[in-house]
Image (cartoon, rainbow over all chains, first blue to last red; front, side, top):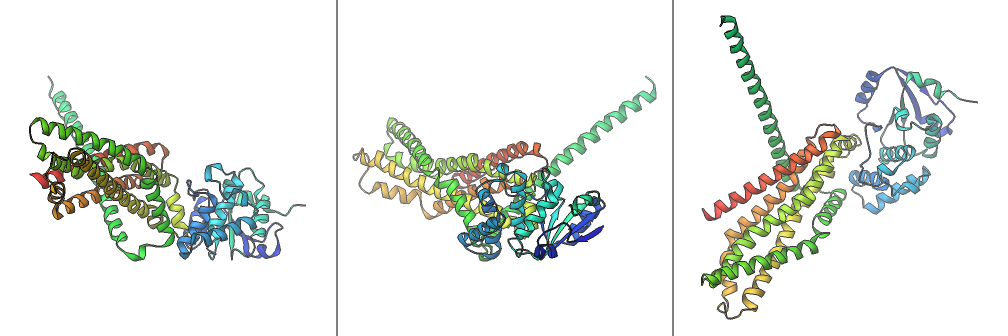
Amino acid sequence: MTVSDNQGTPAAGAARKKRVILMNGPADRLQLLASHREAAVVSETHPLRANLSVLENIATVLQFRTNSYIGEAEDIALRLLDRAGRRDCAGKRDPDLDYEERFIAKLLRALVLRPPLVLIDRPAQLLPDTDYPHFLNRTLAALDGEFDQCWILDYAWNSPLYRPRA
Amino acid sequence: MPLSTHRGRYYSVMDALQNWLILRGRGFGTWAGTWARTLRLGAQALVAALSPSTYNRAMLQVVQKQVYFTAWQILPGFALFCALFSVLIILIVGETARDFGLYQYALELVMRILVLELLPLMTALFVALRTGAAMNTEVALMQIQNELGALERIGVDPFRLEILPRIIGGTVSVLAMTAVNIVVGLALAHLIIVDLQPWSLAPGEFSRVVGDVLNPAAQLALWLKTAAFGLAVTVIPIAEGMGTPQKLYYAPISVLRGMVRVFFVLMLLETAALALLYV
């Protein structure tokens, strides 16, 4: 397993908190996930609640954990969606989302509670139609200050994708 | 016939018997496991429902939604249907009793048949078909797609947020809808038997019969039975959904099994209640 810090060209603040972990195979991935049980995971295998809207998916987690009023939780969720530039998808449910919207919804659901670590698991699966290293850099830069640490778990054979481009 | 052929037949019969026993044993194991899971979920739900620390705003919001979708949304239509059904039963029982010269017993018959037995059972069957099937499907899909696992991973207890509110909301809905239907049934019985035919009963007879039939013991049995109906139409479909293997083609099988089990449990509860009251 290889760890590479701050690859790509994100904004400086977010870049300091981001790491790309390059794994050699599924065993590495499982081991890493198992050893970071405290981390919030953004993964293809961790879907949104299909019959809730994006806003409800994010706000319900916050409301459940903090016992806040739904209005307060929704305000925070909307502010996060604003920061990610995806307020327009707040009312959509999972089957109506495109890959990028679904990824943003999962990411915001994961970081709304400010966990110590957010793991983005195999982004190629989450964003199959997107130049995802750039998209991740842009998104994490937009959400700078909303998370403490974010690790991107990807396979070693995708490492060329993370090299800085001209 | 050579001896070896006899031995061959003997062993093939024994093998078939052994395979049959293994299959039966596995089937029994699955059956017992499913019921054990259902009973465990029911017990967990009862304990959690009685524990104040279970309740928070997110959980109560899901309970509210469940009561809205299960009871409030359909209440006018279902109450109207039950009213029409009640009128029909009251008229049939009244006319039959009159034919036999036993009209003075019509009210008690109506109370016992309609209020104590038919309306609670009809309400439970309706909620089972409408909400129980939906719960079974929804929980099975949540299980298949790992939505419950995903919630758990981000620190949300899926039992408190998704499972328990459905059980509480569904059970409360069955109790509330049964109460509404009983009140409507009693009002209609009063209207048809007393108001429209004031000569049929002595003054004060209606109150006396209602008090007699709905005595404290009968009321306790009625509401315990209704609560058991409510638990059956929520816990069984949810337990079946939670036990669904993570393969999409198991979803319809899960709903089928859940609904069949709900039907048999409702019938069993009704039979047991009848036996306790009348045998």
